Length: 307
Image 1 (spheres, rainbow, N blue to C red):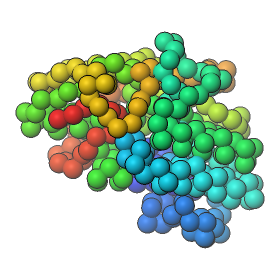
Image 2: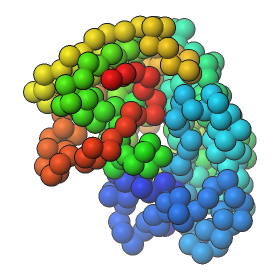
Image 3: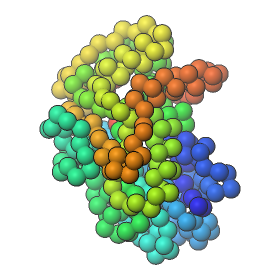
Image 4: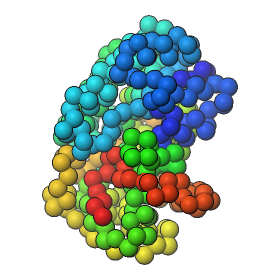
């Protein structure tokens, strides 16, 4: 399998790159390909001749999407269609990622793939439209919804790297008061666990829509409290409602996903989110200065922690 990995410098892309054999992986960053430019996409396909394309690139600063809707749909929707078209014309498998935010959060039990979406924000609408166009354009597709990602790779589009875990730890070390949303329930998912499962899934050729997250759920406030407990860090942490927090983009109050299609394939052996977090903290402790140093910023999907 010759994999063209788009977004190789991000959190998920970094973990996928580490798992793929070097001889099978073509890691591309934004400097190598502009997915909104059809000529750039054509050149990348012609140069690298992949068997599989994994696209982790997206405009995922949720609040910024509200004021930059054109950019959101250009990157998260139309560019996805362009990649799917390029894959279809060459018989290449297309793997694309979406979000738990496609749901409105009105129900109180985990969403399965067949549940009706109801996006509440520009970001969520652009990602859902991208899902539809990927599926409508190319039958050999894997569209994967996930939730609350954190990984050691960082994310270039967030000011040099970072995620919710790093933001919380950095703010606590600076002695800041943290106000974190307590009425939005999610499933934090380690990108290392997601990457492993994605590469297993791609081998099946069971194309379609999948939910892939860790098991369990928590509010962003509970996530932050667990981060500090496991890291042995004292923090001035205060719960706040989403309404009081006042983020520009609406988020679902409940967006926990059930990996039903993985279950049907016998592949749903993902760990609890606390397990992924424990391993993440252990690994970051072995990196001098932490994975992101002083440049970490708030993770994309998180509303949530104001410092």
